[in-house]
Structure formats: structure tokens, C-alpha cells
Length: 455
Image 1 (tube, rainbow, N blue to C red):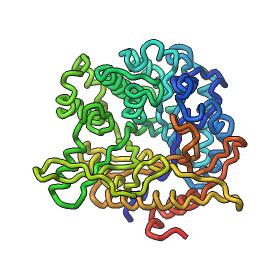
Image 2 (tube, rainbow, N blue to C red):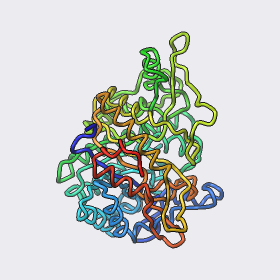
Image 3 (cartoon, one colour):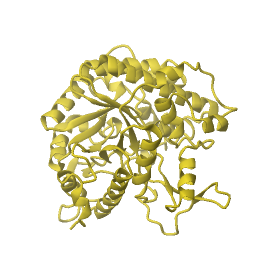
């Protein structure tokens, strides 16, 4: 059996994408509320103000998670719901909501995996500089302490940050996400450095303030470089790319994992950014590098690499007509083999697939079913490749499908559907898709049913 007996099967979501209730219960705006208020910032003027109304419907949603047979649910907490101004006064009503959410999950035998930061930076402290302000790491530590002391008796699986590559690149470089900034390279690197510092301080706080010991990780985008063939030359070329840092491209593992896991920025990155590096004390790495228990990988796609005539890496373009998702992302199942393989090899920690899934065009049919066969086939193909990663020696502890339900897909608004559960945004009616029922069979068999073609 490729998946170990205690392998964790779950699904994931993020606060701003599903909760709604943006001005309810003492919550104040985040940078995403502000960004959605900008004309033409988000497709069709959509926002997360109502989203899936999970804030009011979480009990119904957790019951549906039970129908799917989820063992775990990866959720994020809304920082401005807990500390509306980012620091200072604590919002009891916000904490009470998360108390109820966590307790209901546990009552349904679903283990909560909590992400502290999934992009909803409080507007009040953003006005004080956001991640460009070195104090942001201390603001985040203060927020973490409040959360740890309140929820740390029941939550035992934590992630500090979700996809810093995305909110630094899309939010601070090209403005297609909140907070909608176009910073200089030096400023982008500074914001990224402070977010890594925040990670380290949050780990320290979780260790000190949770009353129940837990496992702590981080969940960046998982770069997955796929060798074009099994030749040693292509393998070496792919590994070289996997460890590289390309100028102006934040989507890599090395720049984000090496400080957190190894205590330094990668040499290749320091050379790439030699003229743009911000100043900071070397002692910061004593804070950034904290013992963590796993690395989370959000993997949707991967690039293929071969060794060129000189042995140097060459990117191999996908063939004309290569399958794509409704996000125009290439379908590359081998990404779920090579992403965890490289991460485990390079950093020596257990891996958890914290996100994997696809955007598809799903609707409720005349018979009341949502027939999303492509999602079933996509997930099956990727999980079969994850089995290969495990067979190759990668230690993989769990898999979280993105996402539990259709939701607000950031700059794309509600035009992309990733969920196992269909959401009618006008009525808030939930409908289990065919993929949800199929996923239940995978969970119940601990992956053994992957060998069988779906009916």
C-alpha cells in the first residue's frame, strides 16, 4: 500500500474566499476588501463580502465534509476578524466564531489544520507599511499569540503562511492581487524578508503559547520541475532548475524554503539579486530558521526540463493541444511526483500536499447532479503520481484537495470553480459533485481505489 496507514486525506479553503460576513461580528477590512473596492480590480466587480456565507453556514458545510468522509480540513483564520486593527484590541466575537468552527469539526471527527495567514492582511496595519514595515513580523507574532492561547488546546496542526510567492509577486510586484502594489525589486525582497521573519516569530509563539503540542509547517507554492526523461542528464538539469532563482520570478522553492529550513538565502538567489538586496541583520536567520515538522506544498502544475547540448537546463514547451484547466494551467500530473520528491530530498522533512486541484466549468444538471468527470480524472492522475513520489522515497504525510467548495477565486472572482461541492452563489445552495462522492471512495480505501477506473 503506497499510502501509510496514518496518511491524512482532507480538503482545504481560505477565510476570505468562503466566509463572507465581511463587516459582521466586529471584523474590519483587510487589503482584499480594499482591493475589491477598486474599479476593475477583480473580474466583474466581484468581492468576498458574502462569498459562500460560510460564517453563517459552517455547520451545514461541516456536515457535507462528513458526507465526503474528510479526515481533515485545512482552513485559514481571518486576521482582521480576530484583531480588527491588526494589533491591540482583540475581537471576542471573532474568536468565538473560530471556537465554534473548531469544536464542530472535532465533534464530526474532522481534524482542523489551521493556516494563520492566507492573504487577508488587516487594512489598519497595512496603512502603516504592511509587509514593508519591519514591525509587521511583530504584529503577526502578536496575532499568533492570541490565536495560540485561544485555540492551541484543540488545534495541533498549524501552517504559518500560505504561498508567500503569490502575495509578494501578484500583490507587490504586478498588482493583480491585493494589496495591488508595483514595488521595486528591492522593496519586493524586503517585503518577502519580513514575511519570512513573521514565519519564524510565529513558530516561536506557537511553540510557547499552545497548551497542546502540535505540528507546525509552512505552505508555499510547491515548485515542481519535471525531468523530460529518466536520463541522469535530464534529472541533473531538472534539479538545477529546482534549486535556481530567476530574476523577477518569485515562484521558486529555494528563496522561500532555504531560509526557513536551512537558515540562509540560496547562493544562486544572492547572485541573481546582488544589486537589489535590502539590508537586514544576519541575526534575522536565527529567527527565521525555526524547527518545523513538515513542509506544505501547494502544487497544481509543473514545468518540464531537459539537459541541453552543453548539459545546461532547457525548458521543454508543452505540445500544441496539451490539456489545460479552465485557468489555462497545463495538466501535468508528474508535478505531484517531482514536487514532493525534490522537497523531501532537499530539506529532509515530511511533505504534506496542502493544495492540489483544478478549475473547471461545473454546473448542476437537469437531474440535479454535477458531473465533473474531469476533476475526478485530474485528481486520480495526480494522486497516482504522488504514489510514485512515495515509492521513490519521499515521505508524504497527507493530501488536501483544493478546494472543499467553489469560492471567491481572488482576481478571477467567481468565474472559476475549484470545489468538490458546487455553490449556487444566488441561493447558497450546496450540491456535492460527482468528484466528492468519488473522493470518499479514495479516502475510505486509503488510496487503494485509485487503481480502479471510476465508474
